[in-house]
Amino acid sequence: MQTSNFSKSSVVSHSERGNGGKSSYRGNAGANFMRDVMLFGIENTKSTPQNFYFVDANEGSGTSRDVAKELGIIYTGLDLHGMVPTIQNDFTKDSITNKLSRPVEMVFTHPPYADMIQYSGSQWGNKILQTDTSNPTLTKEQFLEMSQVMLLNQREATRDGGLYATLIGDMRRKGEFWSFQADYQLMMPKSELISVAIKMQHNCQSNGRSYGGSFVPITHEYLLIWKKKAASLFAIGFETASQIQKKVGQTWRSVIRIAMMKLGKASLQEIYAEVEKVASHLIAKNQNWQAKIRQQLQLHFTNVERGVWAV
Image 1 (tube, one colour):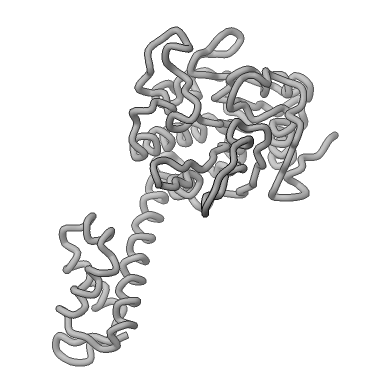
Image 2 (cartoon, rainbow, N blue to C red):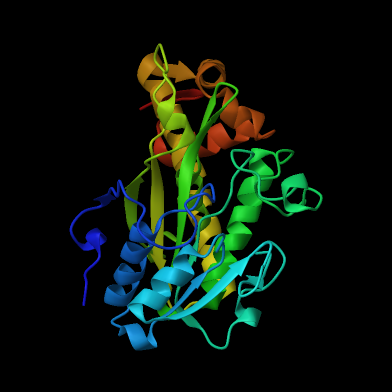
């Protein structure tokens, strides 16, 4: 049995896409990469090819289907367009579980994002779909909300001890750099994340361009892999919310510490003024930010005299 390149390195680079699917279909991950993903799944679920069930919820041109046939594994392909033999499925509103005969060993997605490559519209003979994650009218927040639905949808279709994975890249738009993989990690339970691997990109349209100044071309994507535990959707939702709440608390504490390190010893009004300078992003999201500062001071800092605090 072949072994996955992910067993040797967290970085994989295939200059040739391999046989499978259509090379003309923009955005497909390539057969050699998909073979690595499937082999990693077989190894890490302790399966044989014959009992390993793999689902690609963004099948596209059928690359995964061809690789699965080559490896002799059980396979289902889902896609927004669902051209036979692919099953039509919109991961933002259709249950993946309901399209399958049983919970699976691994569910994979490679979602379209923003308008880099658009997957609904006139070229598909239909209007731009509001549930298409490549819809150019989507805000970043809307895209991320859809993404979380996608990941939870994948997780629900996965058996306990099985894997769910997604391939996602970074994007630079209008002077902003968005690293979606960082957001994805916050969306799902930290206790289930088992691997983050780098996939190098080859033969992209952007590879032929020359960039000047401090601009760094994006030539890689991230493969995020989670292993499902026997926990309810409610339980993992609570865990994820707790992670975010904890991160927010830690951020407030760190910002106040930086302010206090600069001030040494300071009155409450001086602390407010300094935090306003260094943490406008936190203040903008919390109308009760002064109360939050007082709470953190009482919990983690020293009250040296009435109304005066120190690290």
